[in-house]
Length: 432
Image (cartoon, rainbow, N blue to C red; front, side):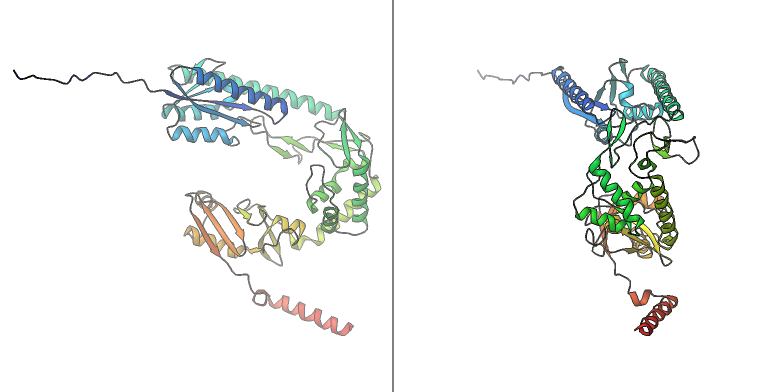
């Protein structure tokens, strides 16, 4: 009898897919206590997610940021990109205020993640954004958090401004020539000698560039440990605190969300408090230096800087990494490495770029003759200048290298410039 054998297929139920879970943490400052708090949050979430059955640990995204806006948080942005790439199913965070303090930012982000099917769980409020009433609760609570942040900010501003009216100094910065002790400015004798030397050399007619180069050659650093520049010396020379007096409320914070420090140009009252600390420079020397600086500003008007253009912060030096600055000399605009301008050829030797050359090469890259700032922003991330080449890094990841030739000096001279040079030569001959 023929034996019949039939293979029996066993049904194995599909295993549930592990939910990919990550956490987000943020602290507000870079102080040591806050760093410990951030480390504790990372440890807590790592342990919690890995111990949860059915969850796949996908890391902790953490930022040290002053505000809860999206733009200034690198890891927050990286988390959003990973969500868009389908790498996460759920995000756990401590509270609404840690995720975003701005109601608009919060709801925009939550809705964006909701469309991707990513759930955000806020521990303190016990809210899941994918739940039916999640968005309504978020709107109410985020508005409350924003109002609470505004109230705290306004209370602090009120206390500081009342202190200014009484001549009190707040938020003492690291100031060369002084140390901070018990919320007071105390003279640092070693640094004070350098301060007096700088003021005296300016009175004697020496340029700020020359002084900066000399201080750097003597290995004397700023309070923060940086090299000296003409700009840093100018800031010192304009600081009235070296006279022992203080102009209060020079700057202000625009709002409690952006927290951008702005120069006070009449928006708020200022107060001049005398004798707030011991002086290093006399009033007479300080005022004499201000007159010299005012005269220098007038004589240097032909070599002015104009930075508010579409290329500002776009051009980077390929040698030292610093940004290029826009200048004007003899009626022509150009772009030069900021290190070359402040510290000279000994620190950076990259040549200046004529602005018409910059516009011509950018137009070639964009394929548009009359391009706008939006055209530049949408196509180019930055421009690297190195050895008579401009490397355009595009948003697509592509690089386009353009070479340029320096303008011949003979061709660039106007008839007026040639005549002026001829007159100087004739004068030199007659003197000889």
